[in-house]
Image (tube, rainbow, N blue to C red; front, side, top):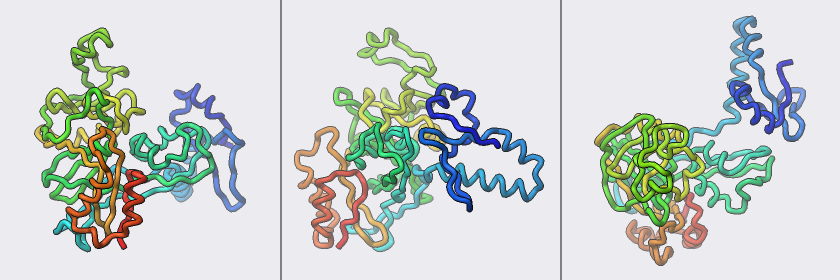
Length: 356
């Protein structure tokens, strides 16, 4: 049999040996569920593929089909996009408007998982998931439990150009392609309080680099003991750089910082996300940076609101601010006020249907 048991600890200790194996937590058949002991999982050895080579053609087809199902069953749907959108023809929306994209997913927690890993698996920033699932401990999760993953968003009002719109308030960026009515979205890490990411400005991508080094700002050179850090695993700008002036869009050597306030003003992305964004963003692309904690959206003729925490403490009264956004859309007489007030109070960062 090509099935053997390994504990997660042993797998981590021997990661290089096991990187090409398929991890399986449960096998379902007519005879019932085959599951390993607690704290273990199955590893499919490469001998499985060797045996496939001597199978009849139809046998190989069904074997690969089974292995493909096992792999995809453990992977979340792609959360970044592309998503199709349609801007409303009037501020109050219309039946054909689509500005709520994506859809929530369900994740089954297995032993030894934590919110950092789950967030990255679904292309979410850490706080994006942690704030939505506030009752959960970040590291000690209730395994064998299903949780909702908030992979649905209201797209911010875009300037109509094929650019990258960064909403600092929600720690997320949106890459628009208006000619195709498509948008891609990625979680980001932003500047800490002392070095806030600039807001209300339009930049353009001035230069791009693969595996860049980091020219360290003067205020940080004493901390790092150098003025320039060469490319490598310890370089904070990661594997891609797109310069906007003295700020930039880049990857990171510390993915746990995505979805948090961690940088000195630049915008960090997961390594896998910045590669995609880099390839679809030529020099000259506009980059608009806004701060919008309250968004109104439309889907299938219904109205939604998405409320985020005021991470930079710019909104004195969130309720008044949200009501103003509602009035701008002429929606005050068309909503369920209980749902609206609950959404403003909870600030989960996920779209809430507030239609009557």
